[in-house]
Length: 139
Image (cartoon, rainbow, N blue to C red; front, side, top):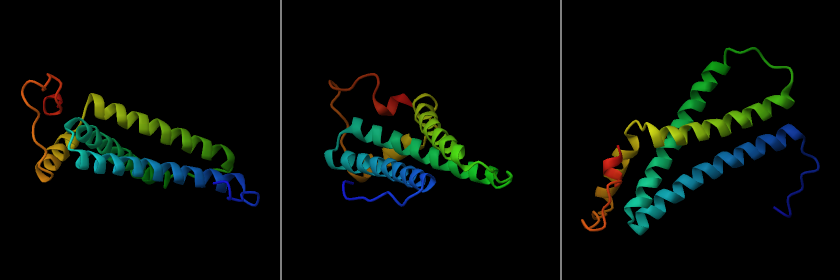
């Protein structure tokens, strides 16, 4: 980023670029978690990756729903505050989806977890290492 020249870029374009990079970073984080969980064969990491993917999926679904609502809104005249509001909505939506998956999952993470466990042949932990909060018992 040291060689990036941004003097000719206006504030809204820079904000849009930052928001796009943030979205790409979230997608990349979820992708890396899923790949690492499959490689390391750790049930807890796999479960966390599945929950992260469910949260990301919900976030994308809500963003698309918001686009359909925004299509009926009149055009805003002040674009400087709308980018800040969009950023705040995005951050709030990420937090809302993450807490939603933790407290009231729709079962998508559990289904994905079971499927990946079968696909990658991840064995169950021995009975002495299992705890009452194992991923299969949480949902």
